[in-house]
Amino acid sequence: MARQELQFPRDLGAHPEFAIEWWYLTGALSSDASSAQPRFGFQLTFFRSRVAATQNMTSAFAAKQLIFAHAAVTDLQGQTMLHDQRIAREGFGIAQTSQTDTDVKLRNWSLQHSATDYAATAMADGFDFQLRLRESQPLLLQGERGLSRKGPQAAQSSYYYSLPQLRAQGTLRIGGQQHNVSGTAWLDHEWSDSLLHPQAVGWDWIGMNLLDGSALTAFRLRDKDGATLWAGGSLRRSGGIVRNFDPHEVVFTPQRDWTSALTKANYPVEWRVQTPNASYTVKALLENQELDSRTSTGAVYWEGLSELFDEQGKLLGRGYLEMTGYASALRL
Image (tube, rainbow, N blue to C red; front, side, top):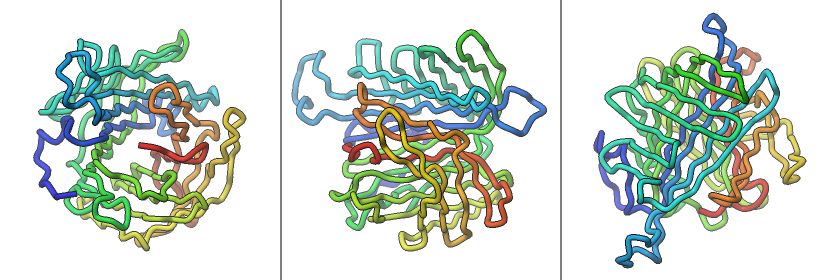
Protein backbone atom coordinates (compact mmCIF):
# COMPACT_ATOMS: atom_id res chain seq x y z
CA MET A 1 0.00 0.00 0.00
CA ALA A 2 1.49 3.36 -1.07
CA ARG A 3 1.64 5.58 2.00
CA GLN A 4 -0.57 8.63 2.26
CA GLU A 5 -0.04 11.07 5.11
CA LEU A 6 -3.22 11.37 7.12
CA GLN A 7 -4.89 14.77 7.21
CA PHE A 8 -7.64 15.77 9.62
CA PRO A 9 -10.52 16.38 9.66
CA ARG A 10 -10.68 15.00 6.11
CA ASP A 11 -9.50 11.51 7.15
CA LEU A 12 -12.19 11.35 9.80
CA GLY A 13 -14.51 10.85 6.84
CA ALA A 14 -15.05 8.04 4.33
CA HIS A 15 -12.53 6.73 1.79
CA PRO A 16 -14.71 5.22 -0.97
CA GLU A 17 -11.71 4.44 -3.17
CA PHE A 18 -10.62 1.80 -0.63
CA ALA A 19 -12.19 -1.67 -0.54
CA ILE A 20 -13.22 -1.78 3.13
CA GLU A 21 -13.65 0.68 5.97
CA TRP A 22 -15.19 0.80 9.41
CA TRP A 23 -15.94 3.14 12.30
CA TYR A 24 -16.05 1.13 15.51
CA LEU A 25 -17.37 2.61 18.76
CA THR A 26 -17.47 0.74 22.07
CA GLY A 27 -17.72 1.66 25.73
CA ALA A 28 -18.59 0.92 29.34
CA LEU A 29 -21.51 2.79 30.88
CA SER A 30 -22.88 3.21 34.39
CA SER A 31 -26.46 4.14 35.24
CA ASP A 32 -25.37 5.46 38.64
CA ALA A 33 -23.27 8.61 38.56
CA SER A 34 -21.76 7.75 41.95
CA SER A 35 -20.63 4.25 40.88
CA ALA A 36 -17.37 3.41 39.16
CA GLN A 37 -18.72 -0.02 38.20
CA PRO A 38 -20.21 -0.35 34.71
CA ARG A 39 -23.71 -1.69 34.25
CA PHE A 40 -23.73 -1.73 30.43
CA GLY A 41 -21.42 -2.20 27.51
CA PHE A 42 -22.31 -0.86 24.07
CA GLN A 43 -21.10 -1.22 20.51
CA LEU A 44 -21.96 0.68 17.34
CA THR A 45 -20.04 -0.16 14.18
CA PHE A 46 -20.51 1.11 10.63
CA PHE A 47 -18.87 -0.75 7.75
CA ARG A 48 -18.42 0.48 4.18
CA SER A 49 -17.66 -1.98 1.39
CA ARG A 50 -16.73 -0.94 -2.17
CA VAL A 51 -18.30 -3.22 -4.79
CA ALA A 52 -15.64 -3.46 -7.50
CA ALA A 53 -17.92 -4.98 -10.15
CA THR A 54 -20.33 -2.02 -10.20
CA GLN A 55 -17.93 0.92 -10.26
CA ASN A 56 -18.32 1.60 -14.03
CA MET A 57 -22.10 1.36 -14.00
CA THR A 58 -23.95 4.61 -14.69
CA SER A 59 -27.29 3.69 -13.12
CA ALA A 60 -28.15 5.51 -9.90
CA PHE A 61 -29.38 2.15 -8.61
CA ALA A 62 -25.98 0.48 -8.97
CA ALA A 63 -24.78 -0.69 -5.57
CA LYS A 64 -21.32 0.88 -5.70
CA GLN A 65 -20.94 1.16 -1.93
CA LEU A 66 -22.63 -1.02 0.66
CA ILE A 67 -23.14 0.23 4.19
CA PHE A 68 -23.53 -2.24 7.05
CA ALA A 69 -24.05 -1.50 10.73
CA HIS A 70 -24.03 -3.50 13.94
CA ALA A 71 -25.26 -2.35 17.34
CA ALA A 72 -25.19 -4.20 20.65
CA VAL A 73 -25.81 -3.62 24.34
CA THR A 74 -24.48 -5.82 27.12
CA ASP A 75 -26.58 -5.70 30.30
CA LEU A 76 -24.38 -6.97 33.12
CA GLN A 77 -27.16 -6.90 35.70
CA GLY A 78 -29.48 -8.87 33.46
CA GLN A 79 -26.63 -11.09 32.18
CA THR A 80 -27.77 -10.63 28.58
CA MET A 81 -26.57 -9.08 25.35
CA LEU A 82 -28.93 -7.66 22.73
CA HIS A 83 -27.80 -6.91 19.20
CA ASP A 84 -29.15 -5.84 15.84
CA GLN A 85 -27.85 -5.23 12.31
CA ARG A 86 -28.60 -3.19 9.20
CA ILE A 87 -27.51 -3.21 5.54
CA ALA A 88 -28.27 -0.96 2.55
CA ARG A 89 -26.66 0.40 -0.59
CA GLU A 90 -25.41 3.95 -0.20
CA GLY A 91 -27.78 6.60 -1.49
CA PHE A 92 -31.48 7.47 -1.72
CA GLY A 93 -31.42 9.02 1.75
CA ILE A 94 -31.20 5.59 3.36
CA ALA A 95 -27.45 5.19 3.82
CA GLN A 96 -24.77 7.83 3.47
CA THR A 97 -21.22 8.74 4.40
CA SER A 98 -19.28 11.99 4.23
CA GLN A 99 -15.78 12.33 2.79
CA THR A 100 -14.97 15.46 4.80
CA ASP A 101 -15.69 14.34 8.38
CA THR A 102 -17.26 11.49 10.34
CA ASP A 103 -20.91 11.52 9.32
CA VAL A 104 -22.29 8.02 8.75
CA LYS A 105 -26.00 7.22 8.64
CA LEU A 106 -27.99 4.08 7.98
CA ARG A 107 -31.70 4.70 8.42
CA ASN A 108 -32.10 5.78 12.06
CA TRP A 109 -28.59 4.80 13.13
CA SER A 110 -25.83 7.40 12.93
CA LEU A 111 -22.37 8.47 14.05
CA GLN A 112 -21.53 12.14 13.57
CA HIS A 113 -18.58 14.33 14.54
CA SER A 114 -18.77 18.02 15.39
CA ALA A 115 -15.87 20.02 16.86
CA THR A 116 -14.68 17.84 19.77
CA ASP A 117 -17.87 15.80 20.15
CA TYR A 118 -19.38 12.71 18.57
CA ALA A 119 -23.07 11.83 18.58
CA ALA A 120 -24.04 8.14 18.34
CA THR A 121 -27.60 6.92 17.84
CA ALA A 122 -29.00 3.43 17.36
CA MET A 123 -32.72 2.56 17.49
CA ALA A 124 -32.91 -1.22 17.49
CA ASP A 125 -35.30 -4.03 18.29
CA GLY A 126 -35.48 -4.20 22.09
CA PHE A 127 -32.95 -1.47 22.84
CA ASP A 128 -31.73 1.93 21.77
CA PHE A 129 -29.16 4.49 22.82
CA GLN A 130 -28.36 8.11 22.14
CA LEU A 131 -24.92 9.15 23.34
CA ARG A 132 -22.74 12.23 23.28
CA LEU A 133 -19.03 11.43 23.29
CA ARG A 134 -16.51 14.12 24.13
CA GLU A 135 -12.83 13.89 23.22
CA SER A 136 -10.46 14.06 26.18
CA GLN A 137 -7.26 13.15 24.33
CA PRO A 138 -5.77 13.65 20.86
CA LEU A 139 -6.07 11.13 18.07
CA LEU A 140 -3.83 8.07 18.47
CA LEU A 141 -2.22 7.15 15.14
CA GLN A 142 -1.67 3.40 15.18
CA GLY A 143 1.39 1.84 13.59
CA GLU A 144 3.73 4.09 11.62
CA ARG A 145 1.99 7.49 11.68
CA GLY A 146 -1.36 5.83 11.08
CA LEU A 147 -0.29 3.02 8.71
CA SER A 148 -0.73 -0.24 10.61
CA ARG A 149 0.81 -3.46 9.31
CA LYS A 150 -1.45 -6.49 9.48
CA GLY A 151 0.86 -9.09 7.89
CA PRO A 152 4.37 -9.86 6.68
CA GLN A 153 3.73 -8.22 3.31
CA ALA A 154 3.61 -4.43 3.04
CA ALA A 155 0.28 -4.60 1.19
CA GLN A 156 -1.29 -6.22 4.25
CA SER A 157 -1.83 -2.90 5.98
CA SER A 158 -4.55 -0.53 6.98
CA TYR A 159 -4.85 3.13 7.82
CA TYR A 160 -5.83 3.11 11.45
CA TYR A 161 -6.36 5.65 14.19
CA SER A 162 -8.06 5.48 17.57
CA LEU A 163 -9.76 7.91 19.92
CA PRO A 164 -9.54 6.37 23.39
CA GLN A 165 -10.81 7.80 26.67
CA LEU A 166 -13.93 9.38 25.16
CA ARG A 167 -16.30 10.72 27.81
CA ALA A 168 -19.76 9.31 27.15
CA GLN A 169 -23.12 10.56 28.38
CA GLY A 170 -26.70 10.04 27.26
CA THR A 171 -29.63 7.65 27.44
CA LEU A 172 -29.94 3.92 26.94
CA ARG A 173 -33.15 1.90 26.82
CA ILE A 174 -33.60 -1.83 27.25
CA GLY A 175 -37.16 -3.05 26.82
CA GLY A 176 -39.39 -0.48 28.49
CA GLN A 177 -36.79 0.88 30.88
CA GLN A 178 -34.70 3.95 30.07
CA HIS A 179 -31.46 4.79 31.87
CA ASN A 180 -29.41 7.95 32.06
CA VAL A 181 -25.86 6.70 31.52
CA SER A 182 -22.29 7.94 31.56
CA GLY A 183 -18.92 6.32 31.12
CA THR A 184 -15.88 5.90 28.91
CA ALA A 185 -15.71 4.92 25.24
CA TRP A 186 -13.26 4.08 22.46
CA LEU A 187 -13.50 4.87 18.74
CA ASP A 188 -11.50 3.14 16.00
CA HIS A 189 -11.51 4.11 12.33
CA GLU A 190 -9.76 1.84 9.84
CA TRP A 191 -9.66 1.47 6.06
CA SER A 192 -7.73 -0.79 3.67
CA ASP A 193 -7.53 -2.49 0.29
CA SER A 194 -5.79 -5.65 1.50
CA LEU A 195 -6.06 -6.37 5.19
CA LEU A 196 -5.72 -10.12 5.71
CA HIS A 197 -2.87 -12.52 5.04
CA PRO A 198 -4.10 -15.36 2.73
CA GLN A 199 -3.72 -17.86 5.58
CA ALA A 200 -5.48 -15.70 8.18
CA VAL A 201 -8.86 -16.93 9.41
CA GLY A 202 -9.45 -14.17 11.96
CA TRP A 203 -8.00 -12.01 14.71
CA ASP A 204 -7.98 -11.33 18.43
CA TRP A 205 -7.96 -7.65 19.48
CA ILE A 206 -8.26 -5.55 22.62
CA GLY A 207 -8.78 -1.81 23.06
CA MET A 208 -8.54 -0.87 26.73
CA ASN A 209 -9.09 2.47 28.46
CA LEU A 210 -6.85 2.32 31.53
CA LEU A 211 -7.96 3.92 34.77
CA ASP A 212 -4.84 6.14 34.82
CA GLY A 213 -5.76 7.66 31.43
CA SER A 214 -3.49 5.44 29.33
CA ALA A 215 -4.71 3.51 26.28
CA LEU A 216 -3.68 -0.05 25.37
CA THR A 217 -4.16 -1.71 21.98
CA ALA A 218 -3.04 -5.25 21.18
CA PHE A 219 -3.96 -7.62 18.36
CA ARG A 220 -2.90 -10.74 16.55
CA LEU A 221 -3.98 -12.45 13.32
CA ARG A 222 -4.36 -16.26 13.47
CA ASP A 223 -4.16 -19.13 10.99
CA LYS A 224 -6.50 -22.13 11.01
CA ASP A 225 -4.35 -23.91 13.60
CA GLY A 226 -4.46 -20.94 15.99
CA ALA A 227 -0.86 -19.91 15.35
CA THR A 228 -0.05 -16.19 15.20
CA LEU A 229 0.66 -14.85 11.71
CA TRP A 230 1.18 -11.25 12.78
CA ALA A 231 0.74 -9.13 15.89
CA GLY A 232 1.00 -5.56 17.02
CA GLY A 233 -0.47 -2.79 19.10
CA SER A 234 0.54 0.20 21.18
CA LEU A 235 0.49 1.73 24.62
CA ARG A 236 -0.05 5.46 24.98
CA ARG A 237 0.67 6.75 28.45
CA SER A 238 -1.62 9.35 29.94
CA GLY A 239 1.15 11.90 29.36
CA GLY A 240 1.06 11.24 25.61
CA ILE A 241 4.15 9.06 25.09
CA VAL A 242 3.41 6.22 22.63
CA ARG A 243 5.18 2.86 22.52
CA ASN A 244 4.39 0.84 19.37
CA PHE A 245 4.73 -2.93 19.63
CA ASP A 246 6.67 -5.08 17.17
CA PRO A 247 5.05 -8.37 16.01
CA HIS A 248 7.25 -10.61 18.18
CA GLU A 249 6.52 -8.51 21.28
CA VAL A 250 2.80 -9.37 21.54
CA VAL A 251 1.68 -12.84 22.68
CA PHE A 252 -1.94 -13.90 23.22
CA THR A 253 -2.37 -17.04 25.38
CA PRO A 254 -5.90 -18.36 26.05
CA GLN A 255 -6.72 -19.13 29.69
CA ARG A 256 -10.41 -20.10 29.74
CA ASP A 257 -12.93 -20.96 27.01
CA TRP A 258 -16.66 -20.62 26.51
CA THR A 259 -18.67 -22.54 23.89
CA SER A 260 -21.61 -20.93 22.11
CA ALA A 261 -24.83 -22.96 22.24
CA LEU A 262 -25.93 -21.24 19.01
CA THR A 263 -22.91 -21.76 16.76
CA LYS A 264 -20.84 -24.31 18.76
CA ALA A 265 -17.86 -21.97 18.33
CA ASN A 266 -15.33 -22.08 21.14
CA TYR A 267 -14.06 -18.66 22.29
CA PRO A 268 -11.33 -17.85 24.82
CA VAL A 269 -13.11 -15.48 27.22
CA GLU A 270 -10.02 -15.01 29.36
CA TRP A 271 -6.58 -14.24 27.94
CA ARG A 272 -3.06 -13.59 29.05
CA VAL A 273 -1.70 -10.83 26.82
CA GLN A 274 2.02 -10.23 26.92
CA THR A 275 3.43 -6.94 25.63
CA PRO A 276 6.86 -5.30 25.93
CA ASN A 277 5.39 -3.06 28.60
CA ALA A 278 3.80 -5.71 30.84
CA SER A 279 1.77 -8.90 30.92
CA TYR A 280 -1.96 -8.53 31.44
CA THR A 281 -5.01 -10.67 32.04
CA VAL A 282 -8.15 -9.87 30.04
CA LYS A 283 -11.45 -11.22 31.40
CA ALA A 284 -14.85 -11.01 29.74
CA LEU A 285 -17.54 -9.55 32.00
CA LEU A 286 -20.15 -11.75 30.31
CA GLU A 287 -19.32 -14.98 28.52
CA ASN A 288 -22.06 -14.84 25.88
CA GLN A 289 -21.25 -11.73 23.87
CA GLU A 290 -21.33 -13.48 20.49
CA LEU A 291 -22.83 -11.58 17.55
CA ASP A 292 -24.43 -13.39 14.64
CA SER A 293 -24.30 -10.98 11.69
CA ARG A 294 -24.81 -13.48 8.91
CA THR A 295 -27.67 -11.42 7.45
CA SER A 296 -25.44 -8.35 6.97
CA THR A 297 -21.65 -8.80 6.90
CA GLY A 298 -21.95 -12.58 6.86
CA ALA A 299 -19.72 -13.06 9.91
CA VAL A 300 -20.18 -14.52 13.36
CA TYR A 301 -17.86 -13.02 15.94
CA TRP A 302 -17.45 -12.40 19.67
CA GLU A 303 -17.18 -8.83 20.86
CA GLY A 304 -17.74 -7.76 24.40
CA LEU A 305 -17.07 -5.70 27.47
CA SER A 306 -14.02 -6.92 29.37
CA GLU A 307 -11.65 -5.90 32.15
CA LEU A 308 -7.85 -5.67 32.23
CA PHE A 309 -5.75 -6.78 35.21
CA ASP A 310 -2.06 -6.74 36.05
CA GLU A 311 -0.10 -9.82 37.16
CA GLN A 312 -1.10 -9.24 40.79
CA GLY A 313 -4.80 -9.19 39.90
CA LYS A 314 -5.24 -5.44 40.24
CA LEU A 315 -7.86 -3.87 37.98
CA LEU A 316 -6.16 -1.58 35.46
CA GLY A 317 -8.93 -0.71 33.04
CA ARG A 318 -11.88 -1.69 30.90
CA GLY A 319 -12.61 -1.96 27.23
CA TYR A 320 -13.58 -4.39 24.51
CA LEU A 321 -12.24 -7.75 23.41
CA GLU A 322 -12.97 -8.81 19.83
CA MET A 323 -12.47 -12.32 18.43
CA THR A 324 -13.22 -13.22 14.82
CA GLY A 325 -12.84 -16.39 12.78
CA TYR A 326 -13.83 -18.90 15.47
CA ALA A 327 -17.21 -19.94 14.05
CA SER A 328 -15.85 -19.89 10.48
CA ALA A 329 -13.01 -18.21 8.61
CA LEU A 330 -13.49 -14.46 8.28
CA ARG A 331 -13.85 -13.13 4.75
CA LEU A 332 -13.49 -9.39 4.05
